[in-house]
Image (tube, rainbow, N blue to C red; front, side, top):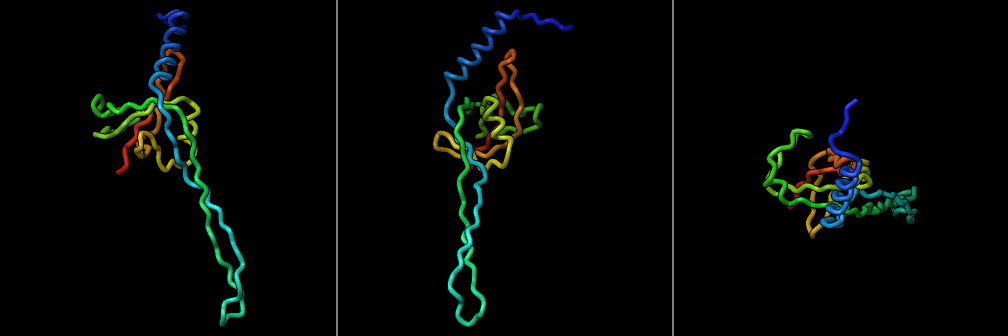
Amino acid sequence: MATSFINQAGKTWFQEAADVWFETFKKTITIHKEPIKTIISQNTNQLYGYNDSSVETVTEYTPVNQSFDAVVDYTVSKNLTQITDIKIQIIEGDVAIHVKEDCKNYLTNGKVEKITFDDKSFNLKSSYFPLDRQGNIHYYFILTETK
């Protein structure tokens, strides 16, 4: 069985430091998902010249979004050119977000239309990959700014 070179006190210190880092640099991001489409049918008067009544279809869209905390890294395109773990090419203007598991689950379930923060809009460019900090796991996504 493999043993760790870091004792339990060191792991605990590292986990707490990762939490302090996240709490210090976090900002609120809003994830917008595909809206819920509701079709409302209303009977209208009979059309002149026809014997059947017409049905007017009205479609209503209900926005679906939720806010989460994330650490945003605007320097990812300067520090990395590609991430081999998720096979993605990073270009100028790409940003990375570090999120916790609840946000990762929301991002990976359903269609994400856009992610907004800092008065900018972004598209999800990559799937996630986990960053394990001695048992304190954050998830890393790459985003591309929309124009």
